Length: 313
Ligand code: NAP
Ligand code: GLV
Image (cartoon, rainbow, N blue to C red; front, side, top):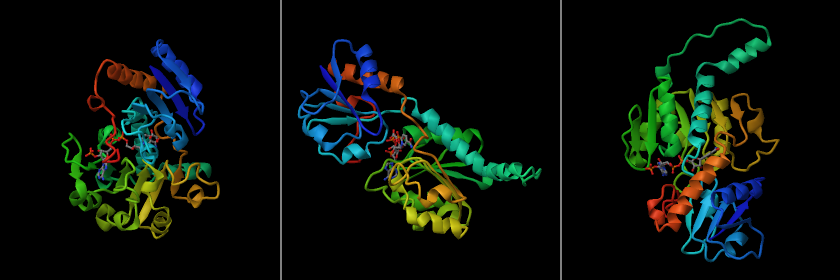
């Protein structure tokens, strides 16, 4: 069995190759170079079309991330299946990140920090968490974990997914029919959707105006993909006081340009696509388990995290 590793965006392939070789000593595993013999499986992050054009016998295209929007833009050999990371240590990080952003906003820690810089001892009036219902868009591997973590802090939690769900502690809405009610019932909006034609630009003015039953004070946490947000809509809504703030981890173009207004807006917090980082050892263990299952005769459809290209995730 031949496995090739093709990573971009400053991800070095060598440590991945070493970990994979340690787990699969009989396989032929190497970083990809143009002109290499085609592989049975590939471990990738955002590879170029040139790479796939050389992989006509590829069975599994194993992504070292959860989101597969970059892979679905490529032309794949007809038999190739995309397999994404199924948690692999990401959901706990996402829960930390979102709870931190939510609590920082709810408890007004930015205000305390500003006061502390001036040596000012001043209390803020406690706020009621029932006034801060949180809506999680996407109730998959990450969204469900995040929703449950938020529930631990006793905020009311709403969730929205494509198919109907029942999850303890989360008031679930689904599909286009449930979307407006979900937005109206949510004041803090967390985006954990995959980027698909149906979700691109979903964080846009008309939807954001429906938050919190149309009342001012909504807050946005986007940890999914930058193209979920219509950038031009955000700052006017913040400046008009309709939205109270936003925490953004993902951007239309990454790295975010140093002169982008998001960096310096007083009510936007920017992090550099750092909310849930890939954990190499856990990811290799998960990929190897799946490759072993395939080699033992399992079909792709039996494995978790196999992408349905027609749905886009
Ligand atoms: P997942 O398990 O596939 O979950 C996706 C969820 O979105 C599912 O609940 C799905 O509904 C829902 N959904 C999809 N299309 C929808 C639509 N049109 N309307 C309503 N709901 C829809 O994905 P995941 O592992 O949780 O990851 C989610 C995304 O997070 C990834 O795609 C990636 O872009 C992003 N991510 C970001 C980072 C970061 O560092 N910032 C790290 C990891 C992942 P159903 O349950 O009904 O199918
Ligand atoms: C990161 O953004 C991922 O999709 O894993």
